[in-house]
Image 1 (cartoon, rainbow, N blue to C red):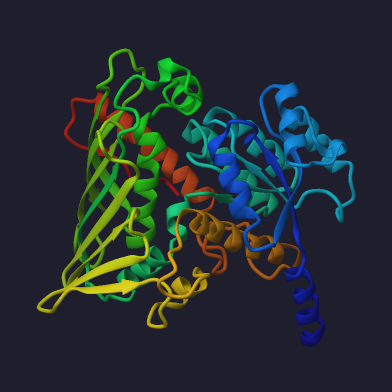
Image 2 (cartoon, one colour; image 1 turned 180 degrees about the vertical axis):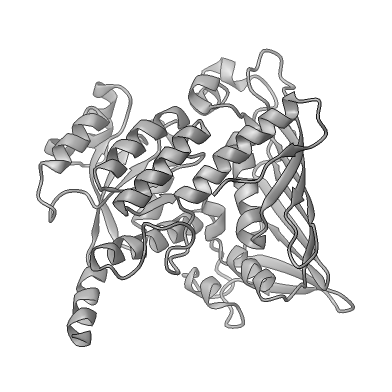
Length: 408
């Protein structure tokens, strides 16, 4: 029996997964990133798509990518209907959702309810009510549902997580995370720039501007590396550019639930009006025995400052790193890996769970790191939506502290 199972498992692992995509057509930035990352390890290929909100552009975008005309759909509803008519050996294994935020919920709900695995861009949806419904659907259907918080895919972020969990820096006392950008320092949305236009539109982006777009990444990075859970927050959201309808600068004080008798504190900064900054995401974790520091713009290095010892620099690709960091590495030391590869690591780990699902090898429909499959899931996405809501609530309130604990 064991031999038969292992043979079956190898056959499934060697399968190239069939990918469908909603959004990501012509002129879309993140769609091309997802397609590159999804296919980097030759474990998936794009076979179907509804790539734009307009039928003509959707079809044209599919032709650009060489999609078979029969599976180059005008609307995502047509794609779901058409794929379900195909046999299980032909229909898509998962759908990738890379639309503006407002379209995530209906697409994710429909595909997950139909039993099709989902990989969705962040933030997950607009409201906690929508997020909770998706969590319940995932629990009911057992589908794999990944959310592409891609920064957790970096090897040195994984090593930082391992160092915290192993006690290498002692108990965490304080976390400072910053996501500094300057591309929205002026009213770029008024120029017709597509990315600025929808990201500053509450109807499409949701409650949060900078806090939703990049602050959600910062929150997930803290949670992933430290494992800490928020207790309460004190937030200050500002809109500096006249006429803009969403925040473009966020400053948030964080209080975490006690762990080992220590109630850790934190600071989160998410700004898109800091002139001269490109994609400056950085995090510092201060423990009782040492400090860790990681910068996204120099992602192959993790700095460790032990108490009473010299600074240490851990570098990607070396044998002294933890297994998770080594598994997330594709090139030898000295050959930089970055954004695309980090995205690809999220996909690769989600693929492992997708391949395990039909074999019952793991509880892939559960919550958290599914049986060791290390990818951000629907629960992480729901927590991120809850965080955005609480930050907006806190900023509008006269109270000093707003409860931010995420209800399980």
